[in-house]
Image 1: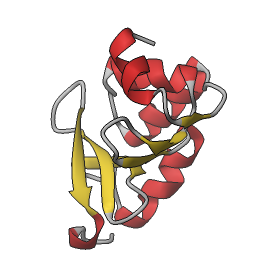
Image 2: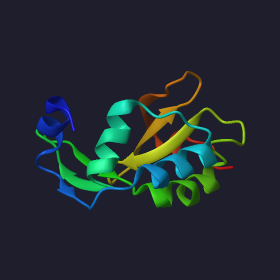
Image 3: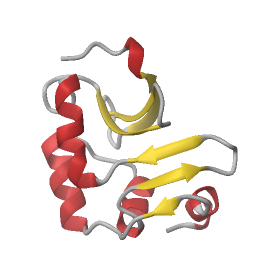
Length: 116
């Protein structure tokens, strides 16, 4: 994990890392080419939760959960432009915007999203 990612995530409760194969399978199922920083982080910690240095709370989902978590929203390969990978524990979702490759990371209000 690069120095910047370590610095912003050092206060999070981390999980054992995912394998590259687990990451590749989930991303292929969702039609996502994730940012390199995300892949590096997930190889170090497959999911994480806690307060970041800026005081914001974050929950990053395990890669094995991403397909199931995105089904209610009809996201990923179904034609939508976002793939959720985490939240703030409230109404804000963190997602990949897959209109470009590699995907960019965006913050989305869950209340405003149209479920499937």
